[in-house]
Image (cartoon, rainbow, N blue to C red):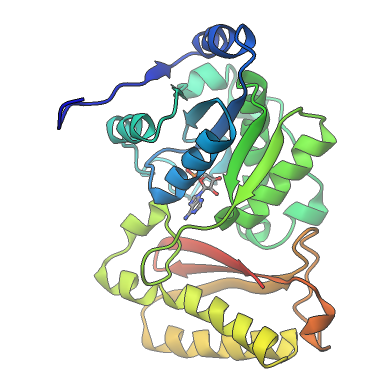
Length: 301
Ligand code: AMP
């Protein structure tokens, strides 16, 4: 291909087109299919999922859909960045084979309030992001189950960046007997440690300068618990105090949660005063609001 020439990719805008494509390219050929669900505005984090899917499966489908059901009334659904042309280009460049881009009315044939939904048990959803975003995980589980019914892949790829979401989707797929294998992949970061996210572009210069502290705090927690054997409770208290100092100096730095959990169950172990080595693995999870921008991150140690 000559330089500057645009790569093209098959785009299915309707469920019928997506099913027809799979009939032709997968069912009739016996090839394996990998699936990467996204909300678009693709960055290197999404790219890493597409690349992994490409390595593990014969064909790869990416979906791009900003799902209204997972946004609260005062959240950023309307202003969420939509960059379809660049997204299609990146998908083609990374070797994806089809992009599914349904409209809202294509995916939800009724008003959301009249639509059926999937609720994953509260033990996974009534904490962390679930506390601050009521209904969010219902929206996520519902749209992913709809997408799994439309894109019948062997493996579906999700980022550990959204750790609670990954566990919710794994649980939903297991409980509802979806045939797909749900695979979680590591978080891609900027050079200064900030987890890549479509929401990073909302940050102004001052907020962008402060944002890497989120990852620094997670690394500090890793060091204190794993190198210094500091009990989880004490390490978290130190981290929260550090963040409170930053919040005092900076405008509108709001810590929504900083907790330690068991990685498979999300059981909260933030008040554990024992030697942290009694836990073979711990995941620290954090959500911060920098003015209006909500950022999340986590680190498994
Ligand atoms: P989103 O478009 O934000 O819904 O994300 C689509 C998928 O990409 C989800 O599985 C996310 O967890 C994943 N993802 C988002 N950011 C990153 C990142 N920085 N590294 C790896 N995966 C990510």
